[in-house]
Image (cartoon, rainbow, N blue to C red; front, side):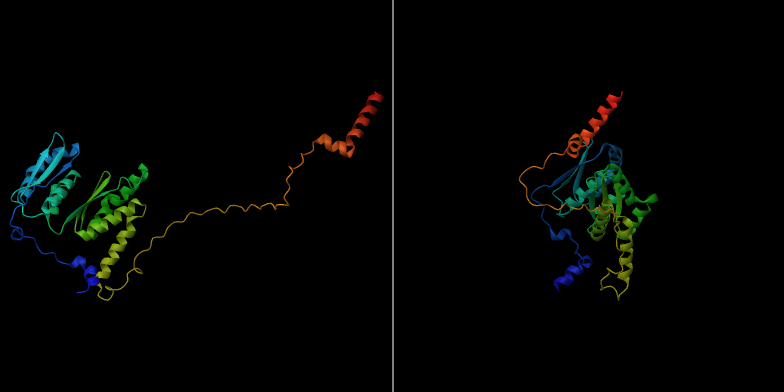
Length: 275
């Protein structure tokens, strides 16, 4: 099989299932992860914690909650045989801390499902712009968010300054791209349209292996009209003169040169003699 073909069909590759027979011996060291949760999640976590423990016990993972310090901890045991399940358990309690319900968070323990928490708080500095762009991800009555979930096969939850996503690897990549583009002032409608067109093109066997750029919507950037500044004519420089320019003449100096000052004095003298 060609290396390029393997890369192109990477999403279609089937990963073999990992079984207890593949790793019969216990781990040499214990691994643990601790995640802090906010105060408003304490009541919900206390109610669903027995379900969390039962779910993780089936994978031989020990779960503990510390209400005083506000953190959740997951640990491996002597019976744990899956080396990657501790990372899955860490993602599960991380999703629970970000207000994801238990029914959705437990799905991350499956092999084909992963989680991604996108931090959007640092992408926009202005608070008003941040709230406006975050609302675009949700849309009116949650319509935009529902479209993203249907097209990517992912569960998406917008909470505070993060976006928690849960689903297949390919869908997580698409959700992250949509969220980051939206926070960069690109409307999610363009990404949703592109995903819908790609889904239709994948069904057509004739267009499956062709370039799809001509079918995808192109983003038109609104260029602001810039006023042209009037051109300033530069003064032509004369020959170099080391001496400073002569001082400007006053009104009296000009009258002395023209002789106008003498005439004015004579008129004044005649008027004074007549009086």
